[in-house]
Length: 337
Image 1 (spheres, rainbow, N blue to C red):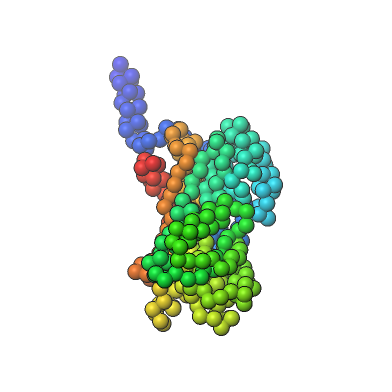
Image 2: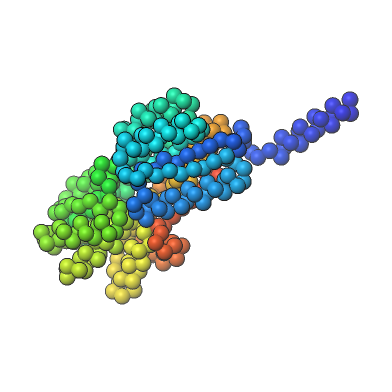
């Protein structure tokens, strides 16, 4: 009798010490990241956040593997093949930053049919079986025009620098910008180029179009292109207009230098690259038996004139202003959805 009582007490003690909310053991589960592009500072920061947090989760015994894979080219066929290889390698969950919202749905459905959890973020997929984590990119684009309405009440000509052609994020941000311009009625987009979210590409593209443009009141962007645009205007001997920045360290540093020198004012907005860590923990929580809504929206990260120095001080050289998620952060986020 005493033995039975001791066993019951031991079980009760074990249950009382178990982490709250744990429904299953995920220590042997494997999660893979399928990334379609790594050619700019945002993507590099995103991968660094994934690697740092994933390695720690493995070291802590929370998950069995947190591997990251990036395709050599931004091509749907290559990423589809990558996902199919992950299926064969026996991953329990695949987290995707997708090259296309719908062209990967066939490979995604194959993964789902194999019992694999699929979580997409940033570049999301539309397959019904997958989860999606994104900011409201259209609202992020429109917020730029809202800011310009306040700062440039007389309106003016705009230069639009878009991101990577054919990617969902690029289309949504651009749509938000154009909606804002139409509703405002004070601005006109007189030129548009693709900067691929990279300052060197943006600088070259802006330099190529500047000779054909009238006076530009402001440059609307998508991130990673603000500093390149500023350099192109400077090299052309033209006044540097109000340029919306995208939270990259080189952009924030240039902005601070101009602010200190002549009171230059702008704002900066982007999705935090650490959203990859939220996607990781969402996948882990689903593997752990949690019920999670298929569509999740995270706020975009904005830097304004008053908190520029603070955000810049926290952003590593060559990096991007960031927010990363711990397991506790992810659980809190999911509880609020």
